[in-house]
Image 1: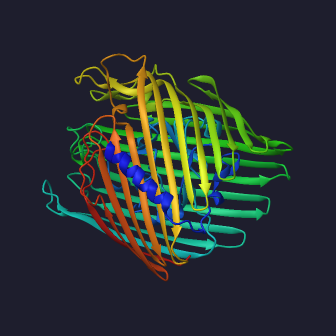
Image 2 (image 1 turned 90 degrees about the vertical axis):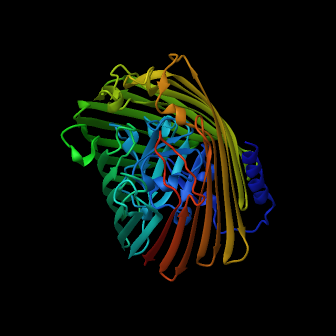
Image 3 (image 1 turned 120 degrees about the horizontal axis):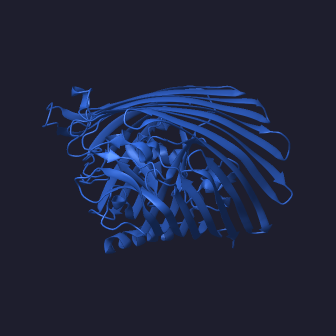
Length: 620
């Protein structure tokens, strides 16, 4: 660990002693779009991290999953390469304790959160990704125990089209099967029509690879449409539709070593319509309707035997919500309600249906000139678990214009998935219909310092998750079964710094460095049980990006360090260079450039060194 802390101090020293110059990028221009309030990030009382479109364009990632792996505090546990399958969690939670949203619309996978990131969103349509750390029921409702990830799509300003294509390889051969060299290719195409009162975007992508080891080939197809309509200056409508068909070889993904020939197909359809209406100078109304359909087809024996070892799941989710805000003389009031119906038809889970209804009330005010307070409660009713209430409070005090102290106390809940409750997949896994909901309480204190081109955030938190759900067993000959394993207490702190230097009007350097530490302790657990997912949680995490830009040339070097509770630590280093010439950009990526062997889930090794070359043509 001495080397880790030395690296941390070294990079922070570089940030602190670099020459301070004025930068045209202002962090407080970013607006965090909560379901009720829209808040400049500089005014935000919570621990929020934003990956903006400028960073996304420079990162050596072509999928949402690859972009998220550079976000500190986010634990992305990949099974498949380059976004074909991955679980996501925040600050030591499980992969079902984080809620994912698209433009504020919740994407809750009631079958299993393994499919949470199976999203029909090409990277080219993303404006930014907002990562909110800590329980967020007050803002986002159920299943946000450890945080939320809100993906905001672009609102186009001018018409045009885009073509982005790439190809890559590790230049190794598939010695166990075809003998072919491993490769990956992809193309994204899109068009934008922008008028004064309406904007339309249509994007599609196709990614294909024969994998990076035996039976890890994948083919991924996405299509996404978004329409923005400005009826007048007080009424606006946003509609979106997406579909993804994701098929991949699943060698060792869920039941190693017996699933060497397994494969899986996951298809997701997503649609939403939301609007904003300024009823008066004080009243704003924001209704939303959304639908999600997911089909999951897992073949234990692959395509060689589709009559045995096959699991098929059909999941539907229909949701509606109404959010409203009212500006008062001494604050802002937010309130509303949401309804969600979830059902599943499955070969080994059965047929199930449930409803969820939530009501919230939220009030934000400035008690004194520099003290901002946001408090409220979320009341939830679930047809299986009845009524529960989740209050929350966050506050900040601006000591100076540059230095702010922030703190929050939050609670939240996770409803067990249909897989947790009813799965019957003997001899591998069985559900438990007697599970109770997970509940989280978290308190956090920290500060934010922002001065010209330098920012530094530091936060400490304590979280207790009661009735923590994991898949457990006491001997390896038994199936894994979901159980309320115990109470999980987590202490953690995270540090994040950013520094920008302008060498001239055409050249600048940007440095991001972040470190997270987590300490876990279980209480009231059953002794001598093996837990399936918790054992791989992150204990130490460092993320660092350094990017340089001169005119239309950019170079970014990214470093990630992960140390899990069990298993060896590892460093992953990635690199991207790009050069734009008018409307054409040529880029080259080198991922895992030092050829590190590492694992994020079980015994699934992730890709070795990988190189790719791409060309992008954009007219808007």
